[in-house]
Amino acid sequence: MKIESMDKEKTGMQEETIMKKLNIALVGLGFGESFLPIYLDHPNVGTVGIFDADPKALRAAADKYVRAVPYGSLEEILRDKSIDAVHLVTPIPAHAEQSIAVLDSGRHCACTVPMATSLEDLRRIVDAVRRSGRKYMMMETTLYTYQFFYIRKMIREGVLGRIQFMRGSHYQDMVNWPSYWQGLPPMWYGTHAIAPMVALSGSRICRVNCFGSGTMDEALTRQYHNPFPVESALFEFENGLKGEATRTLFETARAYQEGLFVYGSKASFEWGFTDHADPYITVANPAEAGVRGATVEIKEVPMPNFYHSLPEPIQKYTIKSDSFDPQNPQLSLEKGGGAGHHGSHPHLVHEFVMSIAEDRKPWIDEILGSNITAAGICAHESAMRGGEAVIVPEF
Image (tube, rainbow, N blue to C red; front, side):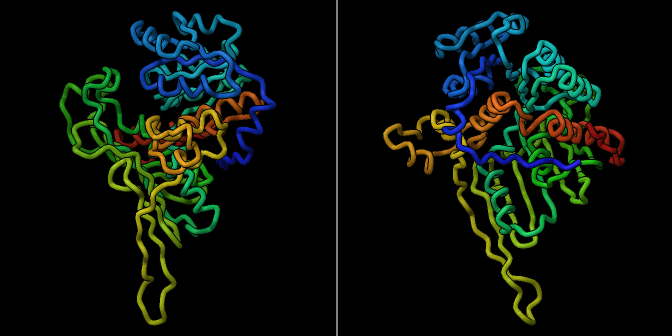
């Protein structure tokens, strides 16, 4: 199965004049609140409903965003026939059941990562998409970052040459996060490290070998029976490429990073040490006669903002709010600092909304989302079996 590449060439301004307005509900207002103003400003969105299990969070969001419509529960949202789609930004253990409930209610569904934590639940979501005829999108931030857009451009323009190998990384410590995070198998939430490799490979992951490493407090092992704070996997793609990803979640002293490394025959792209550091671009120069190996040129490259495909009202959300100057919007967008996982949030919202309005599959649909998520689930299974190879099923 070939993984199709996302390619949006039309401008948002062209689209907004012809598409109907959709009514969206946003469920989960912790991290999810960062998406609320984007939906409110999207030219193809009508009303925006909101719900959070914490009444204080719900009231605070309703007071801050007076155009948002508060609901008392997800069930109340699904009973409202005016709602076209639901975006779930809820705890990981709830993703599968809530996604299926949204789809079975006849609504389109977007869900934060990971899609689910078992292969069976992935199959159930895929079945629900088929059964309902609705759209499903996994809201994977790393597939809409400045860095992803930049390296995809390098590949398309032939600068990178042939991809020889890829790496992904996600280093994060979840101490004091909500209880469901405690002891979570690292690769169950490996999508940020895995997704860019799948998308850039043009293929799907078909096999994985993974090793767990390190030790952690015994209390962290009880919830999921996972003994590993770190998991590192080698993935095989259906087209023959290989990639490696490392994921840390607990008791590992490392600066936060959601990194992407792509090594090509002509040039390579390597993430900086920290999450917001400029990446390194290495270019191989033609080898001189009689000289062993090629000389290389290495430079740090600031990332441009790929905002042009977005409708004008939501372009500002690709940068930090205090970087945007409404008197000089173009200059702000070209030079402003990154926001929302490297500018990805408005791209995610726009793709979900337009896939519904245009009646097409979203790019990160249930098939692509399942392969990315299943690769991590199978990686943890491999780690628990001492690194044995595990076949990643096709959905």
